[in-house]
Length: 132
Image (cartoon, rainbow, N blue to C red):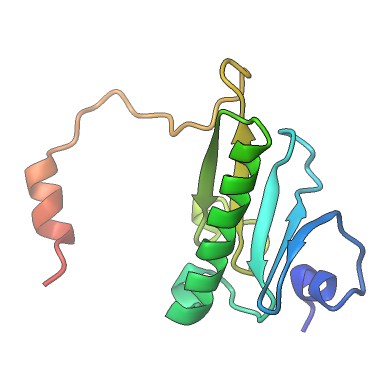
């Protein structure tokens, strides 16, 4: 397998590790765009949230919560927790990972979906998307 995150998990590529247990690795994102931007990923390969089993996803999310709790104890004021699924949603590495962005009040960082000017019909969309 030629997955960069799998190579990092195996120790073939170095990383800035901030947390690790038997199932999960958390490391700083090399983008170095937001102080503490952390990627939390399972040690087993799963391309994305859609291809991940529930147990693995739960372990990743519990580790993400642990990271958020840690950041808050360190004095950060909040955190953004983001999971992208598939390239169309901005996922660049096809290995499930959660982005945790520690935040400070008025830090100037904008993690926001830009909304189009048109208003969507929520009733029609709910009918279309409802799980039965």
